[in-house]
Image: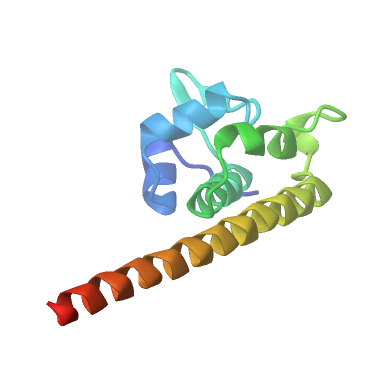
Amino acid sequence: MSQIMLIGALAEATGCSPKAIRLYEELGLLGIVKRQGKYRIYTERDLERVKLIRQSQQLGFRLAELKPILKPTHKPISDSEPDWLGMAKQIHHKRTLLQEQMRALQIQDQELIQIETEILECLARQ
């Protein structure tokens, strides 16, 4: 049997706030969370799911981008793994956007270097 934990333990184990965990649940990213009385009961699956959400957010993914990956419509979330192919596609898309941003930033940096050089040359002639 897998270990069960309350929201405080899950928050501590993931570095996530209880408020964020409740939001993930509200958005359907954790599926149906079991309850014992008024307490939410989380499992190892929930722990891994929250860690995946946190890691994805740190890499720049928004929760809206994760929803179709973590909440597949073709089977119940309690039985499902994340849509790994969908995740790979999202990562590829994110990397493409980052590469475009890096190219734009390199161009901007070259323009700034040019302007800085021109300013310093003008100042040196005075």
